[in-house]
Structure formats: structure tokens, C-alpha cells
Length: 117
Image 1: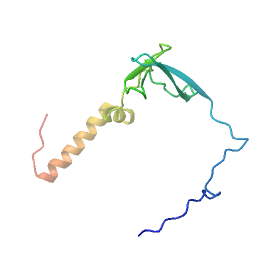
Image 2 (image 1 turned 135 degrees about the vertical axis):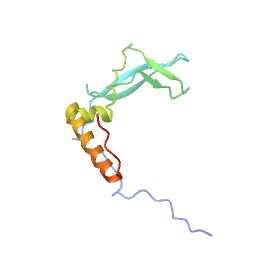
Image 3 (image 1 turned 180 degrees about the horizontal axis):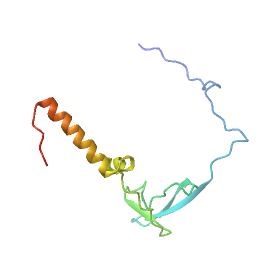
Image 4 (image 1 turned 180 degrees about the vertical axis):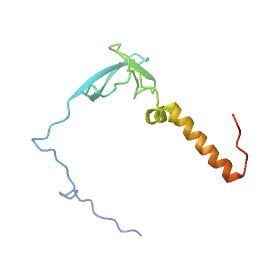
């Protein structure tokens, strides 16, 4: 038989009580309309850098609901590829010279003739 601990209130060390001086971050409430016919609101941080989605999943029906105010979500930036980041550091002529250097080294290691152009 397993011994049970008596029900006791939590230790005061683990209780977290907000201080009177603590202030919550400013928030804005965005309203969404569910396709099933009801409206609900979701609080978001009131910050221009935070992207507020145009679609939010309804917690009652699990369906995608659109914003009631008609605002559209900002278009996301296209992802940067490895090639984009490489071009930020080196120019095309530098990359061609580096490629030739590496190919020459590879051919010497493998004992393959260098291709003449």
C-alpha cells in the first residue's frame, strides 16, 4: 500500500502573487468571426512589430475564423536562401575564382587532368 500525503496548502515559497507595482504589457483585443455564426476576441501584444494573424482557429468548433475588422495579415518576407547569403559576402567573380581554385585542388588530389577551357 502506498502512503499518501495529507492535503496541504502549497508552501508560501511557491505562491506567486503579482505586486501592486507590476504592470501588464499593453494589449489589444482582435475580434474574429467564426463560420458557425459567433464572434470571439483574442488578446495580442500591442506592438507594431508583432504580426497579428488574419485567421485564428475557433476554440469551440476548431474551424478557421477570419478577422472581423477586415484587416489582412502582413505578407511575410521571402526566406533567404544559402545563395542569397553567399552573394551578400562575395561577388560572382570572387565565387568563380574560388570555384576554379577548389576544382584545381580537387583534381590534383584525385589525379585527374584539369579540364582546359
